[in-house]
Length: 334
Image 1 (cartoon, rainbow, N blue to C red):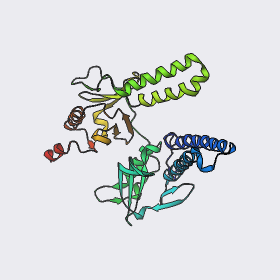
Image 2: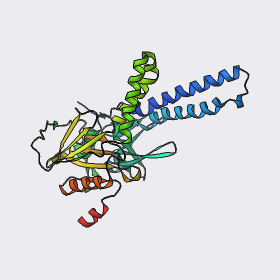
Image 3: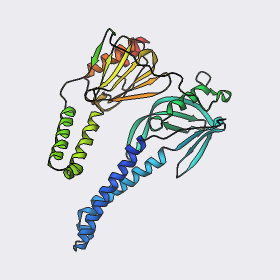
Image 4: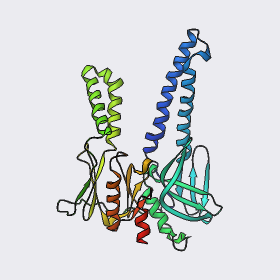
């Protein structure tokens, strides 16, 4: 019999933090090696630029690794409460100390001197403290939200442990939807030529150009530009809205197609960014699974963005507008 539920950390932690730390660490080591070379040539310790360059980069590398190790704990749910454990500390939050549970909302994550907004499930404690569980960094966060929703009554704000189950698998399987016969189809794709698209083609051209010269040059320079091109391609999604469906596609990876029935969407989030143009749309389904689609910061004009959000809102899709660009609409509706 299962008597606990454990969250599984995903690969995103490695790609965002550990790899950054290792990359910065490599640059710092190169800087320290150059520093060693300068000292061997008789230069003063304070007359070589590599001390100034290598030290702060090395500290940033250490901080990146430390941040990942300390902010994404191993999390286990049991009958007594929720346990959090990292290599630096471990603690438990008993059920009786939890005041309320808020499923899937935006919370600040402080990284060095900056604050970034991340999707999280929040445990508000009776002593005024709180614990954020950042959903994008755990594989089975959708099941976590199903478990917590099952025991927490939002109206009475009470936890009913008699409803606690340690396994609530997703009972609804994603269907293949044929949208060929759909009506009221509108594509929100943005301009054909943008700076990001030109950058992708330039990076790919440089990458394959180095391969034409030599494989060694490709490994040193070309591979870096190819990875850069793939990074920009990741942001090339666009959206098709029809009478019953929302479809997300990629301008370069034309075979990628994600279709969502409007009735299966619990919440659609226009995630905030600079200049009030969100760089991604998060689709949260009724089973609490999350699907995030990034696009260029200036992929849509403000009017396109507002038109798409307004249409979905009027068709009954729950919208979370983090920049409050539709605040007039909400006030008029109420």
